[in-house]
Length: 424
Image (cartoon, rainbow, N blue to C red; front, side):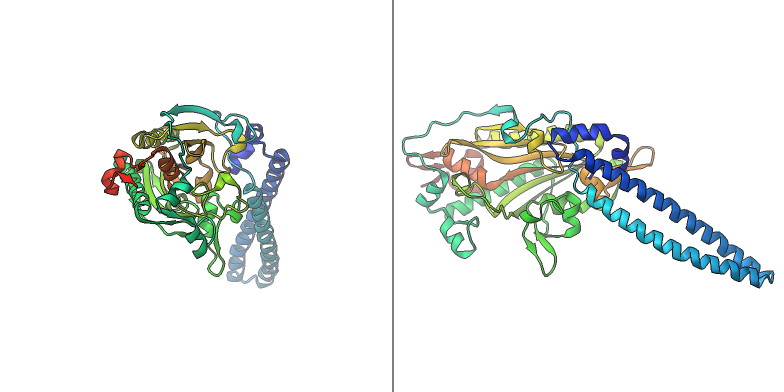
């Protein structure tokens, strides 16, 4: 979330940034934050003065008792009792102010980077790069859900029987291709300097708040009510929370981690042809990259992450494009996001397969993730993450773009992982 110091000192700039996001009622919320902050600070000052006076009088009481001035000491003791009650009331008042202030701060999204274009929806995102030839398929080419059925590699009906819609079962060469992609992505990330980690698939509430999924996205997350845990929608949450309440050294940067996990998203209300097959699932596999960076180098790191994902798609020889998200489509916690989309020839449309984002200090402030700078003062770090990659739509693109009349070819870079070069 935004720091109070930043809000106090940059109200006009914040309102301009929130306008790019089309954030409703921004000025009223910011004004309310500033007023709550004023009340909090004045209450804190009053509490500090009361505690200081109480401490001073307590010392006097001891001296008076020693000098035999018992009556005077008892009078002052009575006053300290009143001050303690006053301190208790002020502490409760301060807690209320802080709680109300935090609730307001949780409502305010990150301020967009100056590169973020204005816009209302995905229609206004900017295409900044496009590469790869869209293959010309044979007559009778199929979308991936028909290919999955034809070659018996993904069973959507069986998953529906076991659990429900959005939980497919991968079979035979389909399961091996899925495993091959995971191994390939992890190997590529490791070669690029990311340390591989394995993480829990459930997180507590503090972790969800730390990275911004809570309290903003409760409806999108599966909740285990008895234990108050949440199934992760992305490995970003547990991996970034490694560094919650951590004070780093400047020499620790960059910190780079990669993780493979199943991911769980409720995706309530998703219907229609655009979510058929692998296009939108409740459970899916994803390989994530997460970086903790010095603020001076985070945007260079973001460019490096974008280039890393580009290299993977180049090796897979999939036609793709990169979009810079507009203010209206930007995620709540992000300052700047680049989306990657693969062209699905069988569906004749683009499919999002990765988001690479810089959150600047927004998550770090929630996480209390700081580092000591050269002047030995602590300041907030920058956090970044990206899909590298989300598997369902990558797999959909591979099946559709690599289909032939004789079967589905396997990209050359994956063949050492699959052990076969064709699904037929």
